[in-house]
Image (cartoon, rainbow, N blue to C red; front, side, top):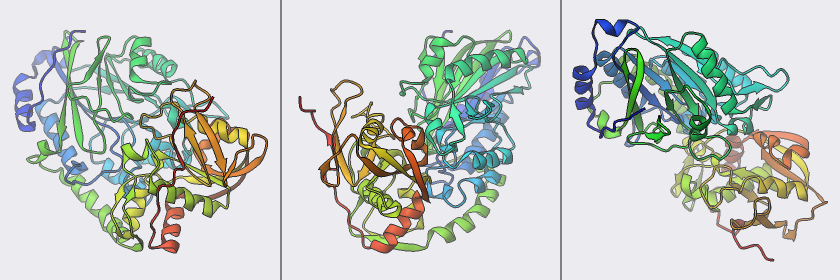
Amino acid sequence: MNYRIFKRTKLIKVIAFAVGAAVISSSSYAADFTGTVTIVHVNDVHANIIETKRAIGYPKIAGFVEQTKAANPNTLFLDAGDVVAGSPYAAIDKGIGFIPILNTLGLDAMTAGNSEFAFGSDHLRTFADGLNYPLLVDNMVYSETGEPFSKGYTLVKLPNGRTAGIIGVTSHLSGLMASTDLKYVDGVAAAKRLVGEATDAGADFIIALLHVGELEEQLNALMMIDQIDGIDVIIDGHSHTGHPEGLVHNGVLIAQTAGKGTQVGVVELSFVDGKVTGATARLHKRADFDEVAEKPETRAALDVFLVTANEFFDIVVGSTEVELEGTRNIVRTQETNLGNMFTDAIRESAGTQLAFLPAGYIGGLTKPGPIDFRTIQIMARIEVEIVQVEMTGSQVIAFVESTVGTFPKASGSLLHVSGGNYRIDASAAEGSRAHSFMVGGAPISADQSYTVAVVVGALKRPGVKDGKVVSRHNTTPKILEDYVRNNSPVSPKIEGRFGAATKSK
């Protein structure tokens, strides 16, 4: 394909342009359609549902979708996943309370992000069954039966007579979350099969609605394009890499926003005689929505939800004397005092010798002062169960080694630790980067058994999967809440628990 690149414009000007430029004639409703199909998309909203200085908020996003559809009836609205976890609002009922709000948005389809699997498969089934649009995720299957969690594609008939085939595939990290009765299967193979199934079912063009990003080595959007024929455009999520004008790889456009509800993406697919001939992408930031009218139905549903939410959040549970560091790009690259406090809380609660917590479960920057429930949920950004596992020293080493492959690049898998310490040599050969392990002040012993607290999703990780599950414990927000309540005012420090160091010869 030949792709033209358009510069971003202000929202109102864009809508006016779309009205004048879209070709909507008698041929628009026939198989030889020549004109434009618009795709509005979001990804990684992470429960940022209200309007703030940075986030757009669902009412205005929904209002923008309505305006776009008025300008071009041949418009789709898609969500590339990670909806139900990441802000305090998700903590009240793990995102179930979002359903009445989401059902007002006018979405045509959603794929599941790894965060959707954070609360177990039964919870996700309840969430998916409550939506008035399909949740597509073909490559997470039930371990016992091999059946996919949900259908992998859907068809949407547009007013122009063309049928969109939308396929859904999620990240391999979905298999490491709390849905332990599900397992990840190869996303490339799944997508290749889904393209064929959707085409056979009547799709005239294919939209790959992915939650894979471009950064993970095991599965990414670039691999999809290189190995699969028949994808016309990719709407992506997971890596939070906002592409102002899209990313074109081997002739296929990849579109993604920066996430957290701060942007809305728009893709224009050009058709000539019913065939896709080109695509352009643009992003709209928070400031572009100042003049956009909210959708009344979405505002009403959100207001009902917020009454309960705000009463819950205002309860104070403790205080901190120091700033607690959980900022995304800091906590995912280095030790922080919040990571230390959080893992201390987990180790104390589980009664173990060691506790590990991936950086992806830690969030926020908390100033000195009171800590209320809202702050607890920001710090413990994704609720997950903690389990106690009996592991040998060699299994502990294998577990940590499996998480440090991208260091020093930011990674949600980077392990914060309590009860021990370790070092990482990024220049060492793969399989030997984690080293200098200590437990309780003594060098780790390969054959000795240790009690270790980990998130339930880690049970599928190297080392942990070979250990023995001893007991199950509370979820992370409750553990952190109890610790803050019992130890306030808190003042955790950085203690050199992990970091970069060259491995001795």
